[in-house]
Image 1 (cartoon, helix red, strand yellow):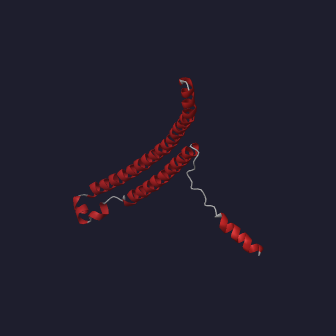
Image 2 (cartoon, helix red, strand yellow):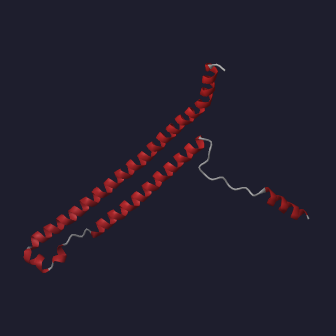
Image 3 (cartoon, one colour):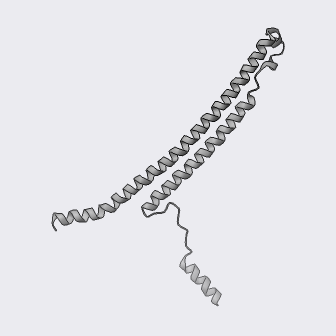
Length: 149
């Protein structure tokens, strides 16, 4: 056996793995791009939500401060609760929106990553999903024999 034959044999065996490796890299990069897009969109929405809630809360605090300033120290000291800002609902709403958004975004990212993993597994000839179990042949034959009798 000469060296050229050995080199060709090794090349023939390695090339399919190189091609599959390139396919895996391509699928992985595509998956990461999709996941990055989902995360970026989620972060932008989160920032908009938080900025909007912050502006509303600041406006409520400013209104409350102006009201207290106009009323004077004696009025505020007599009934301080009347001069607290009405921001509790704003904070709770922003929190709930944030939790919903993070949950939705993480679910979408999980779906994309799972689909990418399944694609990579499929490219290697395997399947990410477990195969359905087949009934043993003996049991099927016995059932067929019992029906015939």
